[in-house]
Length: 249
Image 1 (cartoon, one colour):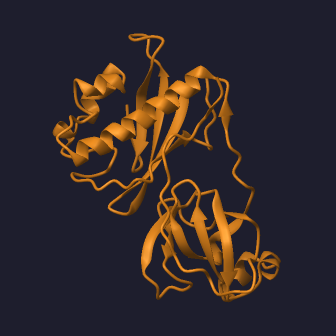
Image 2 (tube, rainbow, N blue to C red):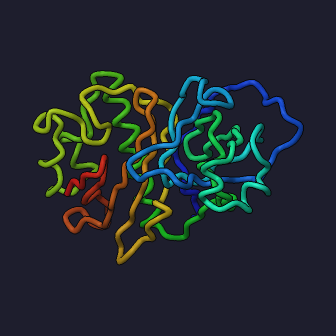
């Protein structure tokens, strides 16, 4: 069976239509020139005086161009050197990040042309199982913060998702915080996205799966690494994951 890799729904903020004659530049952007530990601010309007509504990570792709205004045209901007771009007035572009649904305005200075995202379809049942398991984990994680539901990071629920050797090191009761949400409290949005990590192809039966979501309106990304667990074969389990620059394994 051929299954799409995207399991979670996206939410989109609603903004007024931009007042410009026509869209400028490519259909899709990627974030460019932002430090790895920083984000590109997304604002409610075309300029730094407008309120920030979120941020795009330094490696964000699938940023759909809804049109730009002010500054130079995309063609003029593309011909400039990095030094010239730093001194030139920047246009502001209205975008929607297709992976999270985040919508707003960003400075064109930190955008580069990108191709349209290609829907990934799988004939690999193990890959489908890996994606489904992370999607189920994220759904259970959100439910545990909305109700008295048990945490999927603690036993006995954790055994459904994680390899036995990982469970003790991720227990929020021991750590004092939930390592996936990155804190002691959560307000997870409905914009949870689960997909194969586009920067890391599957290798030797290991499947890197990226979960992107917002907590208290702040964008978070966690990379999970899954393999078939010999203890429960042929089922998949999470053997490690990366969050906030730390590896849990």
